Image (cartoon, rainbow, N blue to C red; front, top):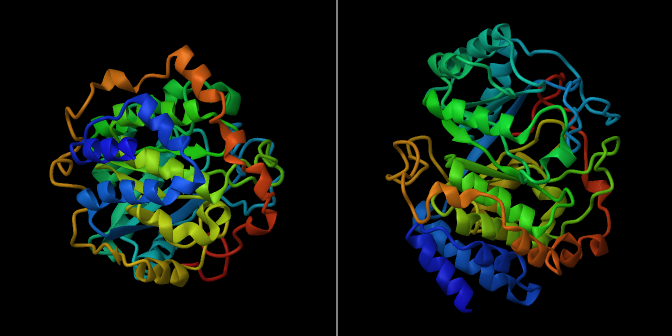
Length: 396
């Protein structure tokens, strides 16, 4: 297929595909799916070999968030029956993190619900970072605390944080339909603050919220322009009690196409298979390892994931290997922070032109993915009842 040959060549050169090419990946048929995976797999192996980086989530503060993000079980007004608790103490968080590190995780991601941290919260998280670093030599720590205020990123960096996560989630054009209590620009600003402070930026998306193919391309192109080191790709977990509980728009095949498109647009970036993989990829999870070079081990913030031992078996059975703590994740040209000029300029990350958006929406949006035909798998959405905030051992 000429399209795939072109995309592989561009990916090996770190050259940005055209929007039309990115849209064409999402529009490929199920008959061509293995060819798409194989092509994107060549790009993945060029920059990351067969390594899989493991990341482990620790939810420092769960529930009762004042923001109204429609996808989130912790949102304002959520009726989802999730765990709710206030800040973990540093020793509690460190103990939870140690379980993930023992399971093979190279990075610990510290997450707290809320609009953004107060200065006291930053102090609290700084103490937690120091405790984790003291007890787990060589571990990376990523903080995810919401919108940052001036100087907070620098304080987290000084405390030992290696990275900061703040996802764009969806396209700028549809962001207001998903969240009203803050803006897309607020999110972009926080990612840039993290980068300016010398933190490795982590920013990604959520697929399956009813967006069109054009929206998916928009957000991934915007991420390419923002140039984070890590791009987590989440698939919506439709929690009962949230506004998007009925959004079951994904099939395993569509998820793989989304991951492939992300890899072609962000060839040399840590693309992470994140929340919702068990719910939507199901038995096709191993194929995704040919597209991503990073996953979360075990459970997520408010939902249970695949057993940690099953994650490790899946990686080994698929012919991949867990990335060691002594291995640098990013290619050498990115290790210094950002890839610099590659392909088109950052201006190429803007939204699709209106005529392109119209064309893209005709026949290649969520409906054409036949997600509804697969049926809602509510049986696969399990609320987390173990690990942080409970007396039960974590899944790692």
